[in-house]
Length: 290
Image (cartoon, rainbow, N blue to C red; front, side, top):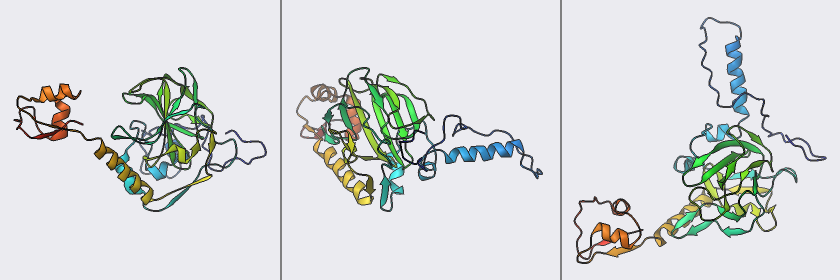
């Protein structure tokens, strides 16, 4: 682990790359009458030790490398006020890129934008905001090439639309470690970095943590409680409500014609209105189109 000049090593540091893979399974059977610690038992002890090296393993109840976020199941875990220490030294945090903010956190076109978009050029380096361990590194239809890093304080940061990934699941990274190169992959329009911060899968506005213009932390400690996320949920619901659009059925209307006029699909209309393709439309009926 990198240590700043004249700073003590962080007691929450994660083990280096030589450690046992944190999600490696122990498959050997153990004899019931063994009295001494066999190599198998020692390997289980080693595995237990390795799990302790995973940041936030107990908090999250595991180490899921397949799902990017599980927002619905994790929310119930936030029951008390949580104080999260963001920094211990000047060198343990950095902005992922130095680009200007092009899209903030919050409602956007009737949906919630759960991160911020930062300007960059194709191939610009994207680095880790804090020390941590890579939990996700793969291609996703929405995020494109995406990396998620979990940090020792329980936060997770996400870096999306990369043109290239430079880390693998289980890699230990320092603040400033290269995660990949900027790009325009996935559901994206133009080169940029989509950057998210989450706690127990709940989104947090990165601008509460970083001053994007200056590239510095705003606070040393972040306080979260249930009200914080309840307010966010109300904002999300309001955004969804403001984005709803309806079409009033007129003579001669069909689902396919309504879909074409509103640049959507018949299957989407059926899902939004809980109807089937065989449903009969009535003149004056309101059909939700978005």
